[in-house]
Amino acid sequence: MAIVTGAVLVDETVLADEAVLADEAVPADVAVLAHEAVMVDRAVVVDRGVVVDEAVTGDRGHLRQRRLLSDDVFRALRDAVLEGVLEPGERLRDDELVRWLGVSRTPIRNALDRLRSAGLVDLAANRWTRVRDPDCSTLGGSASVVAALHRAAAVIAFPRLDDPAVDVVAAGLRSARPVVRRGAAGPASIEVLRCVAVAVGGVAALAPVGVLAASFAEAELRLAHELRSRRCVVDLSAWDDFDASAGRALAARDGGAWGDAVGQLLHRVAATGR
Image (cartoon, rainbow, N blue to C red; front, side, top):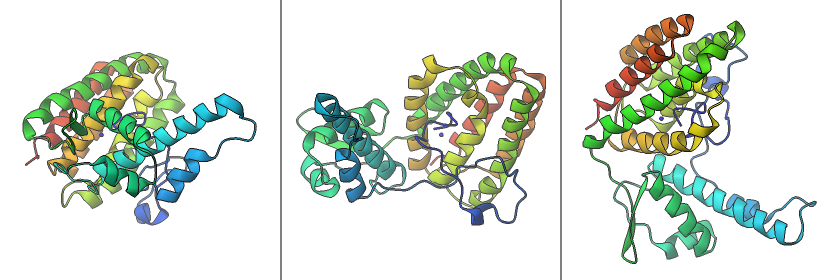
């Protein structure tokens, strides 16, 4: 669930469309993630891959071009997997991806290697590459890993939080409820998971957890893919129970209790998988 960093499914903060929360009172200063572009347009990938700041020249400019292109291809493929544009079990052929994204084979292979590390893609060297098709047996373990990371972040963060910071986290939790309510009728969309991720990750986002960042990035991407692939549901009652438990933990500055609340929410959502 980029449940963190606000969340790690999220590379950039994207504000919700105003219509999404039109009938709910939401603090004006709370940014709610409820939408992110599904795909990077081919022209955007190419343009961002070749445009370099004018001040950057020579070999460094070349390196920056390659980094931007690789990152954009990774984000494009990541979003395509999480949105279901590329479905679980689907074969990914280099030549097709080259034509689709309009880039060379090298950034595509780099992006696929990163997706493999994050658990979104399976690779068999010189044989095939396909979107990972997780089964429900892995959901509990992935949920436990993400919850443990949240607990660690909260234990570090809570002693440092002043009252205004606590208010921001609490407002983020409140702002997520209308999005969860709208999506509770069926399997969670990636927009719902991202919104929940930002709200649940409010504490971690305020913690100096640089050492945990890489672990969060992979663990949350893996969990998000598993939850979406297995059509898990973020039930409103599960969210309300989490909100109550998290609120108590926040008021008491109890990082362990916060981690327990996150764990209970994730395991309840994972248990709905099929």
